[in-house]
Image 1 (tube, helix red, strand yellow):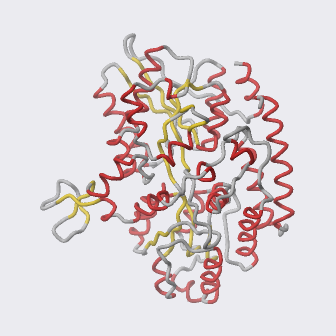
Image 2 (image 1 turned 180 degrees about the vertical axis):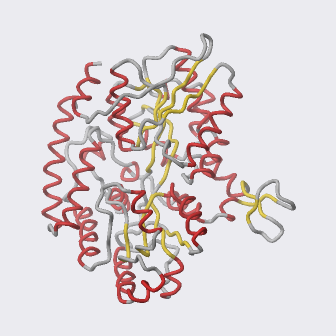
Image 3 (image 1 turned 90 degrees about the vertical axis):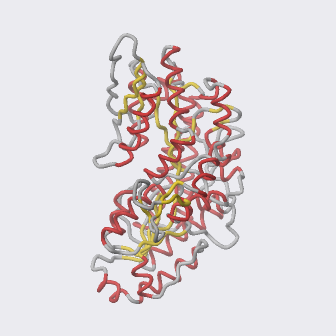
Length: 475
């Protein structure tokens, strides 16, 4: 517990999480803390339906869904405080970047130590490139749940008008710059169709995209094999691969091709800006596919989706996994812990993996889910148009053929080579070092700082953050 309290001193901690007491003496309540509690968030309803199904099949167990924060780091910090007070939930959704911190915190029991033989067999069905992210050494800490990677969204109505051909293969940085030059040259034409147009491209100012572009170049974000063979002591922020990425930001800004809201990690704000017609191209998570498809259809505007840009033609190593996984907290009774583990494996089985994908837009984590959706999972009418299962003359069809946008994330992930770079970095102080990279990129875009200077400053500060963290938890 000493480590837990020391770690707490390193984090910004917010208010406590309210959990629900037992409803009855013989009933087990599993409190599940997640980030999908925002107003109008359809993912909350999908999750509730899965929880209701679990309760129907497991009498005596209630799944209490709680969402004290819509931000991963804020959620984790609240759980940390609540755990210190002995009142933490049973299961927690944790962002991929917080994996090492969660393992170091002492708050969680590795799910691999709780799983039955059947549950471990179920675990093996998860795509290796996904499940390997959440292993540290040989320890299986958590089960992947809401997995995503970034894709390119574009206003196809405008690109068709401008006769800009967006390839189905990834565009290189240079090809993006060339396309944006064409867009800028006809700004007046674009504004006649989209009065709120500002620039060619927008995307969230986040570390997630540079991390993807590093992985595509088979480059590591941190030393010691991305912190997987030993704790990371240096961030590779001044590497040639990262400099290439930072130069892309500078080229976009210097040429007037890029805009953003000014707020770091503003996925929703950037998506709304793109949806308003402010940009032609936009990068965001695959988790937003359903929202973008529905929004553009409602506005009568054609939407296009393409794979994430690549730094150059040699950048063929593929992406890393984003999103989060589910963790079981320590300090509960044996019955509560078993119920929590059973809920985690139920939530992530094939049936619910498919339900979650179809209802949320996050991609399926399991090979058997993908196999099924390649052959079925959707319904079409006599004319081949999408419909519901109970519609007249409805027949089953392949989900990915019926809704091809959803296959882009799967194909992009399948192209990953499975190297250490694709596994991503596990760093205890990830939130802090990621924040320093974002500040460096902002200084390039907003302040005109040279990429080499900005990255050198970020590396110096990040390496000190690593040293401070490692001095607390040990090497």
